[in-house]
Amino acid sequence: MTGTRSLARIVLVLHILVWTAPVPAASARPTLLEPDGTLLIEGERSFPIGIYEFPQEDAVLREIAEAGFNLIRCSASTEHLDRAASAGLKAWISLGNSMDVRDNASRDKLAGIIAGYKDHPALVVWEAPDEPLWNVWYSTFNWFHGEQPRLFREHIESAKKAGKTVSPMQAVLRHYQTGLETADYAGAESAASKLWQLLEMKSPKPDLPMTTAPRRARELADGLFEGYELVRQMDLAHPLWINHAPRNTIPDLAYFNRAGDIVGCDIYPVPEVPQNGHSDLANRRINCVGDYTDRMRAAAPGKPAWMVLQGFGWGDLSVDWPEPAKTGRRPTYAETRFMAYDAIVHGAKGILYWGTHYVEKPSPFWTDLKRVVRELHEMQHVLAAPFETLNIGVTLEPTLHSTDRGIAVMAKRVDGRLVLIVVNELHEPVSFSISGLPLPDGTRLRDDTGTRTVTVEGRRIPYSLRRYGIAVLMGE
Image (cartoon, rainbow, N blue to C red; front, top):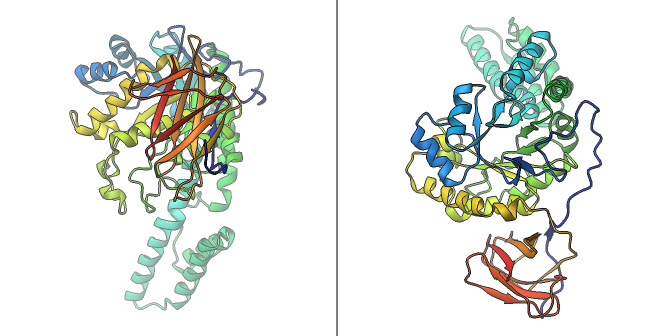
């Protein structure tokens, strides 16, 4: 095929990284995880399609199962586990802060939860506390950047009204703000201490200095790792997964990931506008889902990644979010479908949805989400199949657009047939060719809708996709 030979950012997720990460002796691989990280459900290789919402109504629970979800978050409750099982769903249980076993009371509580529920037939996964690394930093950040400066301003204003001299206080407050703006946290903390003295008050939160956040984070990670080892000692069947925020550095994430068999993060990038701050990467577009999937895999070499995707609109949250999140719309069907497949082609071994409890049922969004879930459910035989290692290339046709990324391709072989999952990560439509296919000339590949067929010629096929388009091509 003619055209430029320049390759935009091509993501070829065609093989699994070698499992070389060191694993402590007490942390043998759970029996419900295959060597390639695939989850076993009822003894079958499975692709988890999970939901955080656990409805009170049995009718909604059945609707969730009928849509194609196969995993649901339960509290540590036999009633919840039984209800999930009755609807044909498997469950995960969040261990919460009880997994941090730096004291005997937490250790006893954790042991009691594991002993109480590890043999329930609905259980397949334990979960660490949600976003543990981020929450250490977030509580400190909110105090130093939000609540504390607000209190300083209020107290200085009160002192001014009382006739006190406030210019020294205002000068110290400026030093404090400069420290925050330049990441001079030691300087900011020194200024804060001095300002509380000038105000003749004590800090209401003396245990949240920014300079100790790294140490406090590592201490929490160590406590969670001790809890993880206890879980593994008591239960070698069920894996434990740890979900992060879309934040923090890969080395810090990796230190926490010692306490999990499965890792992942949540990312909710719709609406796709620069002001949407859920992604803090340079890329704020919807295709940042793939970027975060890459980050999670990089932070846990050899461990499977599950991604938590957007099951709500930011405007659904009953909190005082800044614009445009306050009025943020819900994802469209096309956006929901793209986010799922973008995670998949970047190597995600499972997808879960958060926020559906904010969404009325029925609603157009809920219908669209169920439609995507049903498609993924019907693709179980493909999604749960091993990756196929191939030396595939992608060449983009000439285009008027900038191409800082491109076509992501994942190859699998199902029942002897080659399957290609192809995703256009560009914001614009694009024509391209896929080369290096291990197929003889004349082999026909048909898309999953049955509407498009391409023929291999010279181990190459031509194709085109709309912006953020998806194709699942199967050999006939």
